[in-house]
Image (tube, rainbow, N blue to C red; front, top):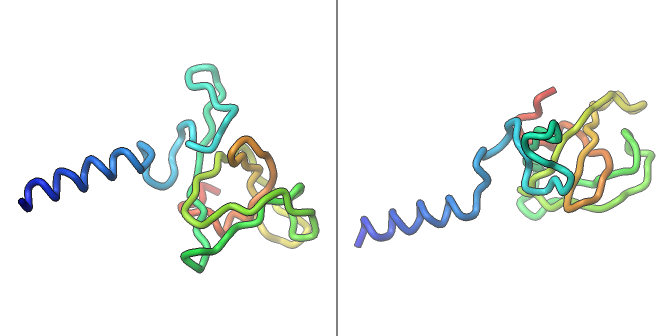
Length: 114
């Protein structure tokens, strides 16, 4: 019985999790423009907020003064392409989530590569 439960848990985790658990150079699950082998690979990161049901705002530019594009639920993955410091002094990543592009704060991306 225990062996069956462990095997089921492993199979379920393989089906749900991406091949690289938090951050790595690969095509992220939310990057609609990524084409492996053609130079379109992007690193990706997992959204980490301070609350289990928290959301990260994706904005039109690298700063809190820019308009919201969408909100990304905690634990979801975003493809990261480039980053820069915004006028607020915070490092922001250009990101892609479910085919939508925008900017996210780096301090809410797990294992931020910056």
